[in-house]
Image (cartoon, rainbow, N blue to C red; front, side):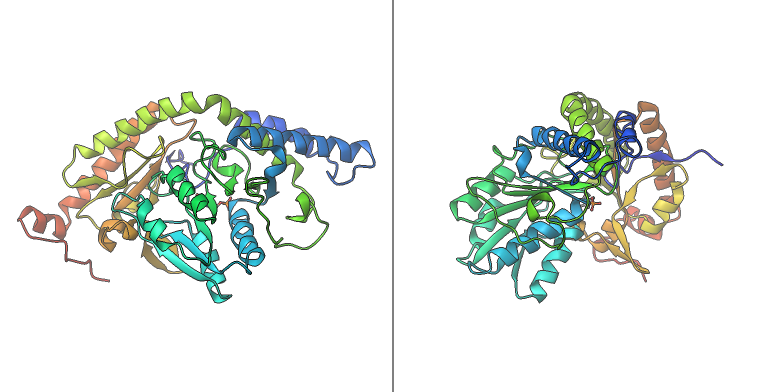
Length: 404
Ligand SMILES: *Cc1c(COP(=O)(O)O)cnc(C)c1O
């Protein structure tokens, strides 16, 4: 088989850290007990391992172990948080506020709740991807029960002003939920300082295994109540029934511990490589970085290469570099990213955009290789692009759309 492309798509998923895998392995075979079967050593051993992981994860985010609820991933955590609050706080109100740049998990959960009677306000970000706190404050009504604002965006890496958002939520007695799937383990997320009431995150975005995630649920000031979304044995304080994924949880815990220890060093190294990549692309004409570069994850950059046809861009180098594009394939259609559209990009600009997300094992040679492969593709595509020719002739192309 040919050599695999350089992987610069860590916001989609990360490889499991070998130290994490090693830590997990005995829990598939030797220590296979059910963490709820506490009447014998098999179960007790599993239960202790789960509680140890809960401590490791709580320690990463400055929470108490009891405030961590294990789930199957961030998507489930988002569903539990939003649906759980909607059902529990129905007597207080039905109004939910969210950002237009939220992940699909949040957007789609909100539309399901809308069908069940929720009133939903979607806030537009500034062109840099950040929400204006004043706009949020103005949107709050007496019946507002929840603000959902992601910590860091999966496409642009833009970090929201979380402390300003939580201060507004607190002041108005509204719960604050954040999808922090891209932030936890990468930057110092602290539930107390950040004023977070509910927080979703996932192991496979931080060098842990797929299929395991967590929901942080604040226990005091205020004590957040939720309605369970799964009925069954009453695991996880009754909030999430089902036999616990012990190996996954153990791996999640180890991944959290490693992130805590190595976050500062990883950040420094990856920001340098990311900046190298970004600076190289910015040497070309008509290239722009999307999102606020001062409030951004260290390993992410989102770049538009204007005046080329987007579909060609990916095809040009996809055997060499694995990245995500500014469009999402929903069924057969290619839709421009709703995040980039919310930031004011045109559909064509969004489609000629690439997201680069570096990771723990990204090497400098790989960055050099990616710079060359992508720059070559961009230059080649521009040579054959009628838009590029028109741009070079000085035409105003902002109104132009690719046919089809
Ligand atoms: C990946 C991701 C999710 C979904 O996480 P899963 O664990 O795969 O369900 C949700 N939100 C954001 C911001 C993500 O990046």
